[in-house]
Amino acid sequence: MLATNVQKWAEALLREGVQQGLQEGMQQGLQQGMHRGQHEGKLWALRQLLRVRFPDADLTPWQSRLDAATDAELERLLTKAATAATLEEVFVTP
Image (cartoon, rainbow, N blue to C red):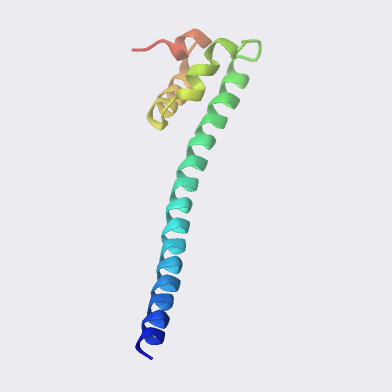
């Protein structure tokens, strides 16, 4: 009888642990997904702005820098892209 009660208790703890793990995993995944979505949105906006401002420019030489850019750098590049006279001015580090 004691073994059965212990087994039921262990099963209940396991179910609770799995449920807690799923909830925490979903929350963490949601937060990471939201951050990733914001980052991708900034990258997309920068690429669109560069294409509009410099329609004949080739972004290929800057591709790896764009792909590796942090959120802060993307924001800085967006600001520079709005006012720069040339594509090169956008990517020149201050």
